[in-house]
Structure formats: C-alpha cells, structure tokens
Amino acid sequence: MRTAVLGATGLVGRTMLRLLENCNWVEGEPVALASPRSAGFELPWRQGVLACRAVEATSFDNIDVALFSAGGGPSREWAPVAAKAGAVVIDNSSAWRQDPAIPLVVPEINGDLVDGLASGIIANPNCSTIQVAQAVAALEAGWGLDEVHVTTFQAVSGAGQKAVAELARQNAGEVMGAPVFPRAIARNVIPAIGAPLDDGSFEEEAKVVRELRKILGRDDSLKVTCTAVRVPVVNAHAAAVRVVCRRPLTPESAAGALAGWPGVEVAATAHDYATPREVDGSTTVHVGRLRQDPNDARALLCWVVADNLLKGAAWNAVQIAARLAAWRAR
Ligand SMILES: NC(=O)c1ccc[n+]([C@@H]2O[C@H](COP(=O)([O-])OP(=O)(O)OC[C@H]3O[C@@H](n4cnc5c(N)ncnc54)[C@H](OP(=O)(O)O)[C@@H]3O)[C@@H](O)[C@H]2O)c1
Image (cartoon, rainbow, N blue to C red; front, side, top):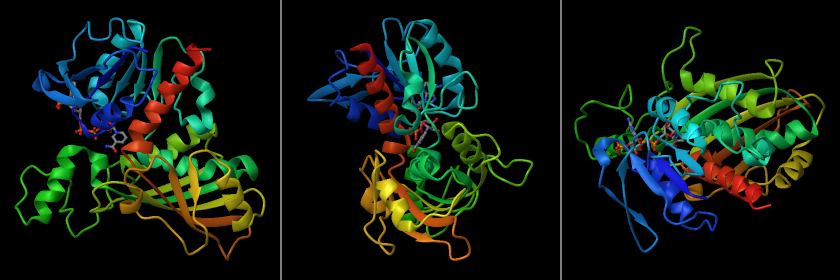
C-alpha cells in the first residue's frame, strides 16, 4: 500500500517509520509529512533518508493508508482531506476517538472493525488505555467485567519530544523555561495529565474511562475509574489495575487466559513483574503481580507495563495497517 506518515518528525512518527521499514506491504517509500517547520528535514529510511514535506491539500493524493501522529488540531484539519482523497487514516490523536461512526481499534480485541474498509478514519486509542485494554480483554471474554480501576505511572515520552527534553534538562540541573509539565518532573511525580475537568478528574483519566468502554463494546454498566500520574521515566508506561469480574476467578485461571491472549505476556509468579526500563522496545503488553484481592473472590490485582511509543501508539497503528493490507491482498 502507498503510505504516508503525518507527524513524521515526532516521537511517534519516527517510531512508525522505523517499523514501516520492515513491512513488505509498504509500496515504495512512505511520504513523510509534518508542519512547514520541517520541510526538507531528512529522516532515516532503510539505508538512506526521506525528505520531509509540509502537509498540504494534495499530500494524500494516491495514498492508500495515512498514519497520523501530529496532534488533535492537524488531525481534525487533515484526516477528512485524506479520507476524501481515498486514503484510510489511522489517527493517533484523540480527535476522532469518541465519534460513534469511527472505530477505536486494538487489533487483538476488535480488529475485525477495520476489515473491508476502503477509505475513512480509524482511531488509535490512548496509550494507557491500549495496555489496560489488552490486560483485561481476556478476563472480559472469560468471566465478564463489572469494574476496572486503574492507576497509571506514565513516562514523559507520552507527551512528545519536548517533554523528553524537559526531563533531561531538569535532570541536568538546568532551570526550566516554558515547561511542558505543570510542575517539575525530575525527582517528582505529578498526578495531573491533560486539562482539568469539571468533575475533578483530568482529561487523561477521562480518556481511559470512555475509551476502555468503547474498545470493549461496553456502556457505563462497566464501572471504570482512573488516576493518571506522570513519572520521571523516559519511556514505557506502567499501570496498577484492579478488576472485579461477574464470577469468582483465581489468579491461576486468569494467568492461563491472559497467556493465551495475543500480544500479552504474563509473569511466571505472583511476585514477578516487568518494569518500564525492561519493556522499552517491546511490542507486547506485560502483566505481572497477578494476585487475588483478599476482600473479594471476584477481584484480582495486577501490574501492567508496555512501551507507549510502540503498543501504545506506532505498533498498534502499524498492526491496523497490516490488517488492512492483508484484507486487500485476499
Ligand atoms: N508519545 C506517545 O506515547 C503517544 C502515544 C499515543 C498517542 N500519541 C499522540 O500522537 C501524537 C504525536 O505525539 P508525539 O509524542 O509524536 O509528539 P511530538 O514528538 O511532539 O511530535 C509532534 C509531531 O506533529 C507534527 N506537527 C505538529 N503540528 C503540526 C501541524 N500543524 N501540521 C503538521 N504537523 C504538525 C510535528 O511536526 P514538526 O516537527 O514539523 O513540528 C511532529 O512531527 C499526539 O496526538 C499524541 O497525543 C502519542
């Protein structure tokens, strides 16, 4: 498929290009797009480079699939243009995720929603939501979920390359200017991600609640809560998750179901776990510390870690594109 990447100079866009290098369904070289600031900027591609272009009205002519990671504003502006030109847009921003007409896709859970799509928009979920959805999908299938309670520990790369630079500067002891984060992030944790909302939550927490329900095909009968915390980790998000199922279950039976779920790895024992440093670069979701809630035979606790730039963004998007390519090649 003829492929374009909008936001190609960003953390997610560069990761997408690196993944696309190994995709045999990519026809020729991808078109690398960003803002006018990056026109002519060279990005690595296989043994050579790609020259980045400023996105414009004709950028998506003759493109089959356009991977977007340029933020909500550019997405709202350019996704309809690309779809009208005949492309399928796979969008990493939150611009289209709650549109009932637009599928919100984690391929291992609801990948069938993209089959047969000739053009249009597909939304990639929020990075924290993807890893939590992967960790609970097998439990929903096997036991039915009543409740999911999440506390995230989110890496700075989730906020883009300026955020990574800000942590590095603060770690080096430099004084901040125009900070990405609302408080110092070095040697600190910040329980506030995204805009404050009227109900006392922050936007990132609301995304986890509503996107988890949409991916699992559930309404608000699935009780979900989230506290989202930024931590001074460069890459890979962690989450502490408590689930309450409809029927009693044991950690052993849950571990068996999770181990059989595609894209999930389960730690060998209740005391075993992965850390962000270890899963940096991994495309799978790692579930550890899986144990019973001693207060409730229907409830389990676990620890979930994944690379937010890979499964939380670029890898999930490339998986969707690969599924589209496989469908077209049938
Ligand atoms: N980082 C993550 O873990 C993650 C996970 C899931 C989803 N996302 C989402 O993915 C998107 C990108 O995230 P990121 O972390 O890659 O951010 P980033 O490192 O800050 O990169 C932003 C990219 O967007 C481009 N861009 C900005 N304004 C633009 C405009 N007006 N027109 C065209 N291109 C424009 C930038 O191009 P220039 O270089 O030309 O400015 C750059 O390529 C965001 O929507 C984010 O919420 C990120």
